[in-house]
Image (cartoon, rainbow, N blue to C red; front, side):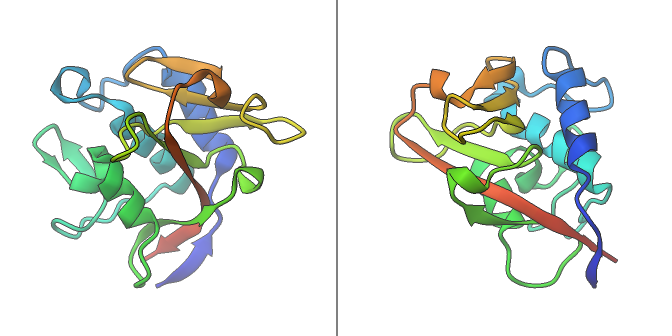
Length: 167
């Protein structure tokens, strides 16, 4: 396995804009089962990477509402999948600073300061790079072009997607 394809940031952002206030019927809406934010983030990242990882338990895939990896819909599991160290198929990212965010990257927020609960996708980065100039799209409190600064959170972490591991 190797990086054979860049992450298509434009495709991820276009998908985010298209579905920020709607639901793609190809995917289940988990809004009433704990929230849909990470499902939406995974859909956006999939639009930019084009490949899923069907490894049971530790992969990143969606077949239907009942056949999906924990990383597809779970906030901490998505982070762990994207930042994995071992070579495996799928998008790959690394923790970064706010200043390193680019459209198509992932932000995770902790509202209570304990665990991370929300996964917005970056759709625009203005200069200077500040929370006011980083705009996101998200489900569960649907949003598009929402400034990061308008969220009330205790902690944040940022993930820059570096590429896609192909089979």
